[in-house]
Image (cartoon, rainbow, N blue to C red):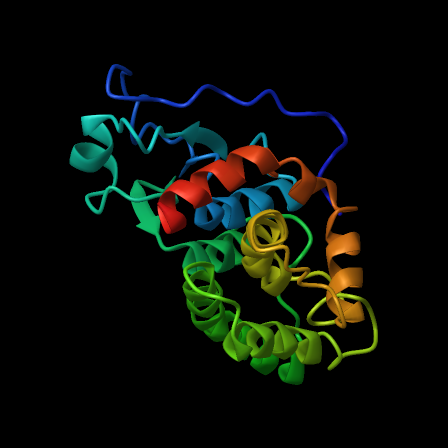
Length: 235
């Protein structure tokens, strides 16, 4: 793993009063929001591949966005986006693949055809999984939530050469980690529902993820997650 142990000093979020960075000057920039799980995917990838000095973080305040971000950087006005080689790209799953294939550092996508195929299946399922879990926030936990979590438990059983989805740590783990981090906290705190109960492989996966420094550096305050999710889903 290429990420070092030196803690990065995180820059403050830019808002409507902030001036833009010197855009398209050859600097590679990753535009994120610290609280956004989609942006967190790309942030983890950047950290794990040891690219803190190669890809500059530019955090955006989503509640008070600078006008220049939409006008000059990324017209969809969403995060994450990546400014690289005079182009701006978006969509978190595309970006984690792009960074893995276009930058140095330990590879995060396997060569093994069976693992590559399974990886694509799990990446495609991630939006479905997130939709099922978020729907469960607004109602009593039904069988759909349990089935979605059981699907991950089964997926974690497919390869025996490690505790991660493809055995070894990969983009699939990065794709799911920010969301499971939030769901575990919120469901436990608000619904008194333990997502790991009866799912030992998921419990082990969470424990192993928490040992990865590149991920730990991106985790958000649990209480703030609960407050944000309460306002968003239960207000």
